[in-house]
Amino acid sequence: MDYIQQALDAYNSPHRHNFNLNNKTISNLDAVTYYLSQALNATKGGERADTLITLANIDSFRGNIEQAILGYSQAQSVANHRQQITLHFYLALWHHYQGNITPVSQHIEQLSGLDASSAQDALGIIEILEEQLSTSICYHHNVHSPKHPPASQHAIVTLGYKLNSDGTIARPLKQRLEQTLKLARHLPGSLIIVTGGLEVAGTTEAAQMKKWLVEHGIKSDRIIKEEQAANTIENAQNSLAILQEHPIQHATLVSASIHVHRTQILFETIQLCQKQVRGQRQNFHIAFDHLAVADGLSPDHFPSGQTRINCYIDALRSYGLPAFQWGDIHQI
Image (cartoon, rainbow, N blue to C red; front, side, top):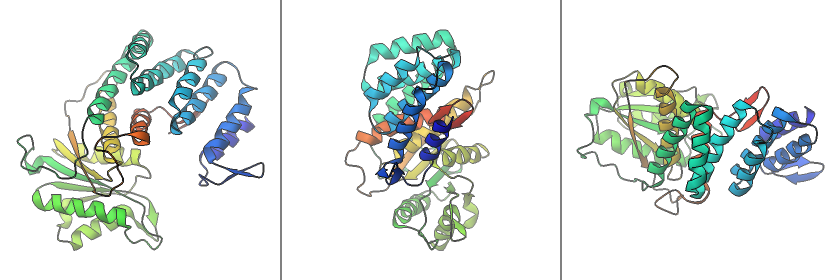
């Protein structure tokens, strides 16, 4: 258990690129891999499966999908029923990432035999991924589209960004707010949600975002602050809950060019999970689109490279599959 705790500590370390291990400076993910590899020698059964699953997750974070698939496959030999469901889910999605259609079908079929609802969830997430990965980044919102709902049924959700050390707005966040302001002026009846709960110098991202928008002419009563979220998954969960409290049919997500697809995948996956809660189906459905900042961060019109990998990682995390899984430890 000592190695597992050390691996978890390394995973949560703020020293992402300068973690000290045995007087050597490595990345924290390298340290996680080292400690988990040591733990493998003392584990068996379900604990060994959890160790292999978490090692495979770390490989996926590094972009080594082939190695991740190998790790998930190895875990199947010692996995219990619950872990088998998780493993087929991972394998279906990562083979989909690689374009391996036959293994995707095989894992969905095996998943269906273990838990039909999970198989339906996997297919739903694959559908979300396919749609997002084939959608070009949108830098200009078409407010005159015939598909656009009345402003009273529309919302703008702007994702936060870490504030400067003195609590002022950093340039990437200012760019998002500028895009929000343009859209808000075109759609004066739309609700605005600003989301970000990380506090710096006594203020939160959401508080500073609302203050900036009000200073630039947006009425305060149009803006709802979401100040509890500490990460993007919580941004999506908390903002979606606010949207569902209002008669919203359509929401536009505003973020960086490399984050808009990932953000939309988070919102849509979380909504899918809510709709497919065992024994109940929600009647409402919120459609999402996005508006990106022209920040030059995305080299392509569609998600590529590590951003494309992160789309799959975000789908898995927002579905509830933890990054670090071992026994009772489940950390997204």
